[in-house]
Length: 198
Length: 109
Image 1 (cartoon, each protein chain N blue to C red):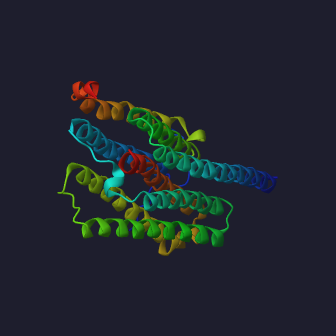
Image 2 (cartoon, one colour):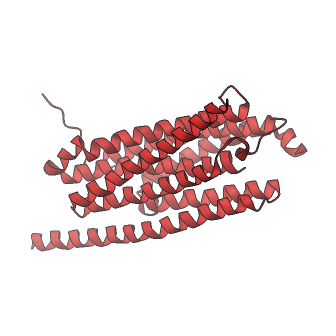
Image 3 (cartoon, rainbow over the protein chains, first blue to last red):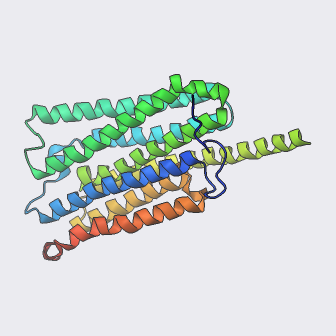
């Protein structure tokens, strides 16, 4: 016996939204608080420290700039993937969603090289407070990239079967996945200057 | 007649999406430009307080562009604005309260 989840496509009269949309925004609100708590920790640790190293002492600015460009590009391709579905062009959706996933992979590969270079030089989270908050913030952000890629890959692959039976429902799912992906981009927009440049 | 209405709705929807896509390209260009400004400002070796203010200002503009256009907040339902307003209301004390406890140090700097 299957149970239908209500208001996945049609709009609820009381909220003016479908349930998926309100659900993802409530989730994103919780994400803002999660990263907000860590940003507050960063401010407190930095202000309370006698000395605070410049990010460039430990971190690679060109690689981080490249990662910023990659994430921004992936946000655009995510918008294009959703727009393709609204126009009922499934082939273009797969193309742009595929590029979005590859951008996420590129971001993680660069992050892997950054992390291994630090470990190679003997820089670990326990080395000092700066590296502790750096690894915490970028590690948590990296996990979000992995999570976003997992959802996007599902929607690109097996999850796309829904498009044939209910294209509007599938388009809503992609839009909600996109909202999460844009938040991941938005968080990085703040992480990049505060960790690498200031 | 109903088919004609559906056709018009679909056409309006496509025009709306085309508008979103065009805006996304402009936002993309702006974000790349602002990223360039952020990195460029770093290499100017500005005074510390000015560098922090400038970097956070640019990041806020970039974040607002992403939220407004990529996340469709320019044309979202009122309930979403209420959710985000409440989030902002709780987020600000979360960010500021710990800072207040070390305000004496901030003043010294």
